[in-house]
Amino acid sequence: MTDFSFCNPVRIEFGKDKEKHIGQYMKEAGAKKALVLYGSERVRKSGLMDVVESSLKANSIEFAQLGGIKSNPVLSKVNEAIGLAKEFGADSVLAVGGGSVLDSAKAVAAGACYEGDVWDFFTGKNPSTALKIFDIITLAATGSEMNCGGVVTKEQTKQKYAISAPCLYPKVSVINPQLQATVSREYLVYSASDIIAHSIEGYFTASVHPEIVRAYIEANIKTVIRTTEILLADPSDYDARAEFAWAATMALNGLTYVGVGGFGYPNHMIEHAMSAVVDCAHGAGLSVVMPAWMKWYKDRNLSAFERFAREIFGLKSADEGTLALKVWFDKIGTPTSLA
Picture 1: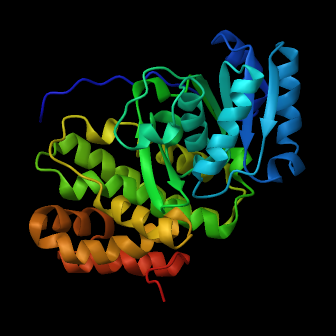
Picture 2: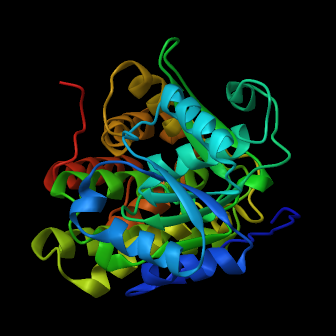
């Protein structure tokens, strides 16, 4: 086990109706003027935005709004939001949506405190200050609600790059599993793929991997597989939805990498390059990449792949485990080829 420092400052508010208190949470954190970002009009049609607006008003928080943030968020929309944040004088950003909205919010929070091009922060420069960040998560997948990273695509050059800095941790993240019950079947299975990808990157590539972390990752993957199958049969199952949502958060909040050495994110790097050119859902791209990458990489860390096969699927060989994951992806309906 390698030496490590661990700090995750995000306050999580998890449970039913927690979104009704977002104004209170933001006020407690010092927010007074918020830019509210969201994706589709689904958040309005569902009544969620009415709840958000009411809570902000009740806590004397002024707000401006900008919607239309797409899956695989783009730099042009981030720049539009930065301009609005500066014009409005926002001291905070509230993301209402999934990981794409929150990733955009993180870039906006950094860019609103910077006089240069926010893309600088995706190409080597680290932001040192940012607006306060808050979120209400309506899609469990990226884990962005409990980490300090985000990914945005620059359309002109088709570069899909990441931003990361301690100032980009959300102050408060709200996770109400009920808000995720209307997620489509397609995005449920894409989300499952994304969570599993977050889980296996270090599991397979790390040069040092403590037993406690391996066991934790395996439990998370098994939770995703089990709850995905329950939710495909019954999308209204609250307990399964809650476990799925928490598994998404836990897969990328730093705990799967404490004491771990020498790991990388090859599946994500490949998928980022792919979806920057072919505009596919991130999780769908990952389910294409993972089985192929696993087949190619397995001999570099054979014991980890054999353990994966045994612990996740009750099988023996690395090849059997890789095939079992592909078969499961096919079963739930997330793609495993570009055809």
